[in-house]
Length: 275
Image (cartoon, rainbow, N blue to C red; front, side, top):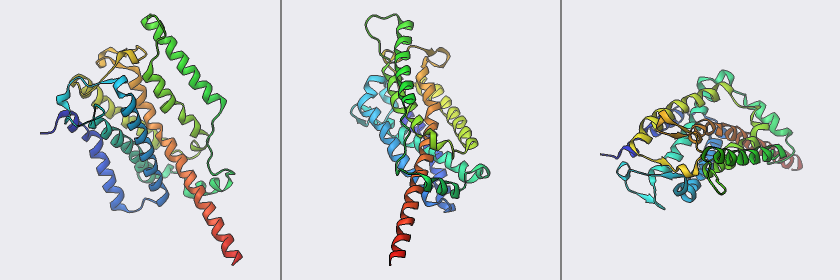
């Protein structure tokens, strides 16, 4: 019998498997959306693995080892790594499923991507503005001040988990916003956010925290906890919301891939004319 934490990963793995079979059976997913999905899955899973490998022992606790298989990587259960990979895969696949099929009526046509990509003067275009850096600074200073006011501790209290999330998850989406906002299927995004919230509430609040799959180190949190949700830190709630914004990264990647295609087509045309 599989341990509970391992078995509970079916909340993410089962729908991912079903959607993957659907994509393969239909064989109608274009090359660029497919490549954008895979690229984002690799990069974002890498961010999750980085968090686990270098920061998990600061931010999280694993109070009941019997809930896992006992396979550890740097003292972190392997289930954590599987969760990040399957969770990101679920969010991207669910958005694509709705964008390309069930809510295709509101899908931005490929021709619009291509026209926009041809107008881009840079191959890589990320908006790194003073505003986004200012937001990150304000979030960091604000969280430190809030933790100090709540806990009244001496010294210099740093809510490490929130600062990590702000730097690696919250603010980076601003970099993609200028381009991605033009192509996001808003209805598909909202549906993805709501579905992710529902699964997260059932999985983490109802199972994970009460059963001891993992916990949060209160010293690394701001200090605001949802009491009737097993003292769930407010940072975890924001993760549920912001994790769905990987859709912005997906749409941005699609624009870049269309840009590369337009450059390739232009180069081929020039070679043809020259010959």
